[in-house]
Image 1 (spheres, rainbow, N blue to C red):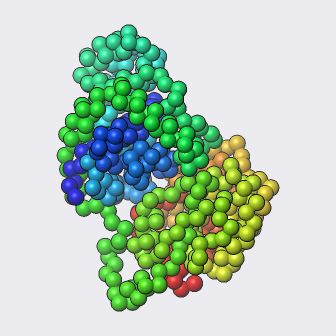
Image 2 (image 1 turned 45 degrees about the vertical axis):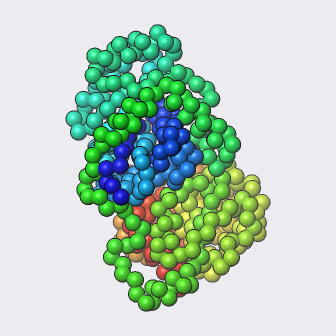
Image 3 (image 1 turned 180 degrees about the vertical axis):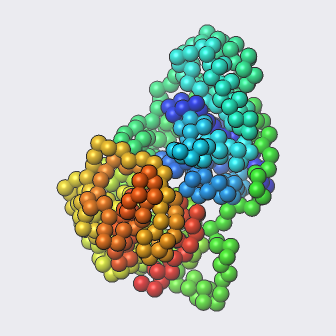
Length: 461
């Protein structure tokens, strides 16, 4: 594919400015024009990509320079953008906000530079007029390597307000590419960890995305935005997309035989377990697994022939009653784990494997209790595998992300999953038999051997 796919990065001075509304609406508007749109999200967030997928009909993908390393941002972008006419990348937090204490690392600005993509700045103009010019000038001039190609004004109160804003921005030298009025119908409900995922809203989410698209079509110059996207040159660092197949792995006859008996890896999905990076299933399939998704809220049995289980993140605390009520599946998960089969659980998956969650019985795989708390645990983590597990050999270093309002007691087992280096040294998680359970969300593209090791254990356990 071409490494010069047209692309835009949608950024803002701060969170809450309207990035998701503009980015999702723009994706849907471009798609309605007949363009194949590649959706991307800067950072570790799982929820926004679900809305992006609704808008474009393609899998939403993350670009995280902390989890995967800066060197993988371009290849992962090209992997997701294959066959597309244009790409839209939604930023994270404020334009220059990155990993704490790491400078620009993992910020929207960092990713925009890695992709050599023009930035569209979404500004909440609800409480300002002429001052908007100083704000935009500051963001556009702060880093000369970041090219702010235009501004979209959000929450504009009236025609007169828009006129004042446009007059002020003429002096800043950054073109206004759109002005959006306040619109309640484009808002999406939030709760303790952010927006409510698409899988929990279905029809309402479709309506919200349609409203976002209508607002962008009415208020933005789509032609100018597309033209700006086409000014992006080749992605730096070469034109090779990332591939889930390990470049160091050369198939042998033995491998081909293994492919004929592909182990079934069950991956939890449905409304309670919506947090998963698309690359994980792609890596599992490339390693020779048959990946089958199931819904712990609805399915009373694991997929037929399950040899391994992956339970990612989500909101089991919201669905604790329903998950607990599905006793047949809880017993099936416990039996699979007791057999020594590989089980990988992250965050929500960890809670599901516990003895109980907020007093309700869970799978009982781990002798630990989980509960909701008032405290938000949030941030990137630098981690090292404490011992050998189904995911990693001892000493394997991976970077992860924590995002939860729950606590597990005890916080680690006799054999912890990870030794976490930051923000304070500690151990966390559980490694028992074939189980690897932890609060850390990791991106397996950064360490493709994780998926291959997991599938190999599925074949031999």
